[in-house]
Image (cartoon, rainbow, N blue to C red; front, side, top):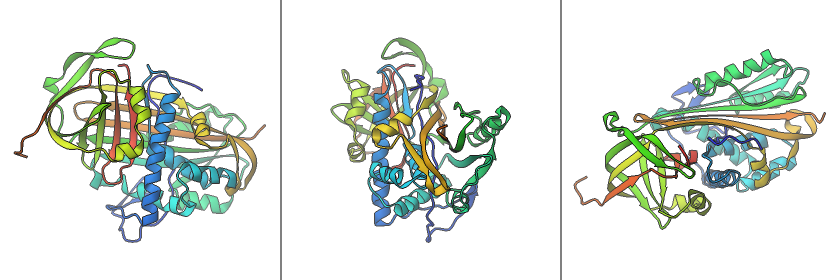
Length: 402
């Protein structure tokens, strides 16, 4: 497995299901955006299962790295990417994906993911979340027309013909990624074998502004006591009323960004952040009790990016190492290769994040008394960027060293 001790993310390929009661207010990247989301009972269960999968994926990813590495994944991208694969692969792979995602039917998974795709980028959430999908098919291959139509109308993805053996052709993919991530990920860090048949690519871009910004004049240089070393960092400061949650293992604080949020988890003294990750199930995260407190917050500015082969993560969670792409009309087992890149940064204004996932298949050839809480994130910590309405985890990570 290829490792760089920065961030992990995982990108998204999204699915269709019309939301009959919602009226699209605009299109973003060709996706009709809606201002509200309304899950049926079965879709609500599927959404919950996607969030459970996201935390499991994060735990599995962290366990692949040393306790000194910074690790970040995008559960939103990961869950929607395997949902896309379920709509392209053979029955064995589809069944495995359904088990990993909590056993929804494929049709319910599709309508659930489609609602998320159309709602999460809405202006009602505040900030900016952009999602984009593309399919790159080797010259000489002609996928089934029904699949191509599904990619266009269901996944909002364009299908391109490409010669994977030519470097100038790969530059077309790089240009697409650069555009869809607003320049945060300018090229794919994925080696396409010349015998690549198809690549499914998703790009995600997030830019959220704190509801209450940090005062730049208060930012100073402070030590960060990392897992391996002590460094000097630009430490931001804020004092005010924020939501706080306490547990035996951590104290957490929530920073709102419209209808999105970043939650930061500071382990108690003596608790390693890797142990905190392994003990936090989605059920525990979902049922945390949050109360207002007068918080004195110190939080380091940081930026990190990553390139990471994530195929093994999916295999450990239960997906086959090979599959046929029967729904494209491409039969015979082909190895599943997935690479992900991500970018994350926070400063006084807010948080930015981007992810690109490249999936390739090659032939075998007020006023009340508030408790005062002092939180200094000057040692390893965990964080998550979430949507407040759906609970969707957009990014989740640990910072061990800065």
